[in-house]
Length: 103
Image (cartoon, rainbow, N blue to C red; front, side, top):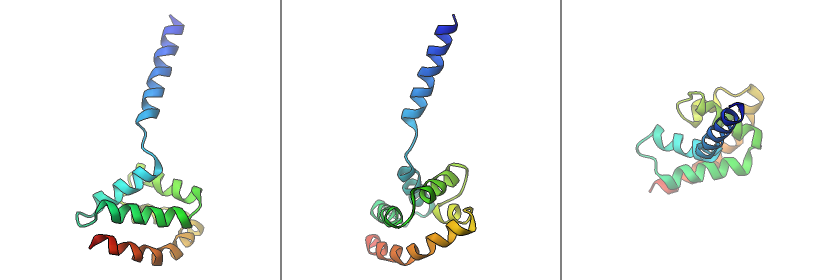
């Protein structure tokens, strides 16, 4: 009986892992849901700029903050430790390039 319970638990864990969204999916979806005027191309562009400029740790922390209830990527960034918030500042100018995607 213990083996059956273990197999069921492992199966459930595998199913949940398969449904989990990647950090990119979480950030892009949050961007889209934050403002109706934003489109997929814009939100994908902003993620690409962030990915090119930020560490994997900072990106993961942004996605985790969204998973934990942050309203959007900007709200998530405000929850980061000060040093990580500072690392995001240079990216903000790059994000302006994505505004072309809204047109």
